[in-house]
Length: 424
Image (cartoon, rainbow, N blue to C red; front, side, top):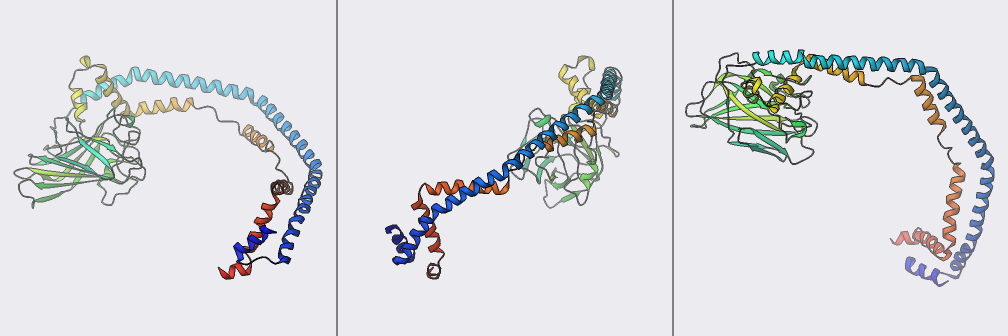
């Protein structure tokens, strides 16, 4: 009685009447009857559900046994055909591997040797040392001793990044620009990009400013783009689009791990008396993170048009070394690069990869296994029975402290009463 009165005082700011106290105490006693009714209802539902459940379980076991028997029978029926098909697959795999091995040891070696003889260029390229190299979105650019620029991304979700590189030169009559995307062991996948070795350059912007007179300025129009390698649908021509698409540009997927390069001609010769500052901007807006150049170098040439693509500075230096005196690392670098170029090697390697794929699964067997998985699903508990079990459990907890349960019910009733709501 004291607890009931205290609750009225705390919530409604008035004592409870005798009638109200009696009503609460009567309700407290009625709770025992409610619990007994729930227990009885649960027992009745358990008895009602038990035979239904037993039949469901029996039917489920029969369905599982039949599904397993069907799988066993079908597996046995298709076993000869599967065995024959697997033998054919293994024979084809062996054949494709032998074809690839023979090609690598003979034709590929000859083709690389021929390529080395023809891929020399008389164009003199001048690698430029950047005086400044900056990037957006937390990317750090570092100019290294060989005049290359190394990029490191501070953020995992780096996209929409712009590199700006300032390149001073005393040359005049510049007709072409070469961009080398350089492989490096420090980069993911050996580079030259940060996305597992790949990158996407959406567009390039080049300007030239006189070192002697900053008012003399030239916006350079680039043309005749060439690249030694490009990913399908990501050609070097994309970087010269007037309105670049974020999902298009130059990329080297399928050729990561090796250096690649691109050459552009200038529509008008570049260079001011007294020196020129070239400013090159790389827009890298691909819609996935880290598709950025990891290491690169910029060179210029004054050769007459048409300027040949030629080779990168590093590969040209390696080719200048006679094959007989190259060390293993030098030989491997050249071989790796040429392997990426050779279309026939890619086709034969793909044939081996395809032959290694397991046989497609029998469609009927897959269907039978799906049926087994379906009938193996546990039978769901009767909804009414599940609710009664929860209700009895909760009611049992309340029975352990009836005073607390009654106080909670009373408090809930009072805070929802018109008197309480009106005053608050």
